[in-house]
Image (cartoon, rainbow, N blue to C red; front, side, top):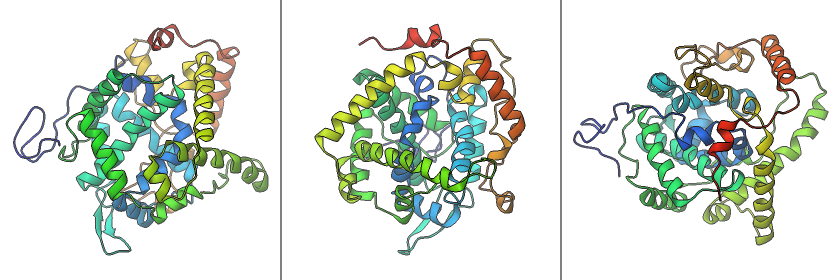
Length: 354
């Protein structure tokens, strides 16, 4: 497990980490975390995070994700991406995220106390983001070698230390992490109300989408069902059993085939579409295309929390462009792409040769 008592390496006497060097464009984490394909696993990560009792209780008591799930995810991803992609400012972004969790605490329905900054709870959330990369790359990006998984684990250690949290719960090696993951899935995870809500989630129509609500609902039903099916395939067998989900060898074969088709299709997807805006800006800074101290990309203002909650300390209130400005930028980018130009030479050169 991580260091806890004495100053070892980059940890302090209480196990809290000092910020290491930030991750950069040479890392595998940069390559995968900002990729659009991670969005295929939205139900998987939402459910598996909320299966951790303390985290699920915090979401149930303090979150309004069911009221505005698209906006909630869209805005939260920006600072989460920033801990990976913000370079010298990544530790500051990590502290910002940590601060949002200061007041999230309470007692769950079984009388168990929880706090979002409990080291085990906070690390579990981080572990799911790390496994999001592993599973996305394994299923939808051509796969990973054992050496690449170990490299990603080492990078996830540097990534986690950007939060300034205790490293006590963090396993010391990739092999130890696999044991931690298996044990947590078997012994600690539960089908909480918050997890069940993700399985049955309805995506309310945002106010700015100009289509009839019945049309919106019908369009999203198959998308949510598809993500639920992907989640079933990516869950460990013990979690499928807990969730009473069915998965057959035929399902696995279809999922693997889908993954190969997605990987093939994304060869032609340009960075402007493939990468999250925070990740795209990071690559542009690293390549000298924009100044190193350029302002960080923030979530669009229209993804902000409901007005009645904007004064609460657990919310990131984005200061990004308005809906009209974002629409204008999207139109400009669409025309400038000129019909889905091929992926950049930088991306092609970094694809693993089988």
